[in-house]
Image (spheres, helix red, strand yellow):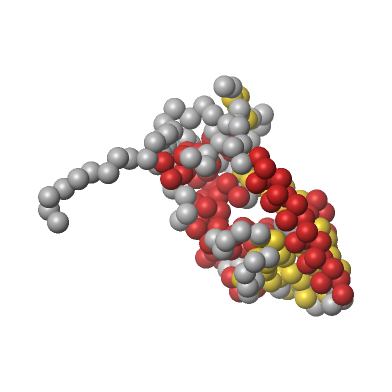
Length: 224
């Protein structure tokens, strides 16, 4: 087991904060640790499932790119959409949208999801909507640009469920403040760990001393 301080300022990957924003996760310490340290990860017990997910996800991205291209969109895929942006606090935010597409006076950012619907997916796309316009060349010069923000819409594109669209109006100052507040907390002083078996069993931080390894026993009562 080993970990070491990251060189330079905290580094926050988008998906480390989306679960916290959605209320699906509550252990701020885990996100803080990832932002501030490189570390030994626990072995992935779902290696075969991960390989299958990568294959299904790749198929979903290619299919969606083909659909958008036929409809006249200019499409940018995965690595072309890498986001790394540094705030005045020094914290770096990084992520990678699956798809950015532009067509005439329209712009679209999408993420392809192969599993069940989650609110964290919505927040992931919203974060791209908030920050990609400042970092993506195709959006900086987009014809729909108004003042400093292009009218960019989003979409969580599920391969097994109906899509979940995000209107441009959701990239509001209020939602920006929510996201920025969370990024600052994750990149700030160390919070206390809040371990629970439900979260810990999916956490890959090997050096966590607070990990809950067993589900709490059932307590019996005669009250009912």
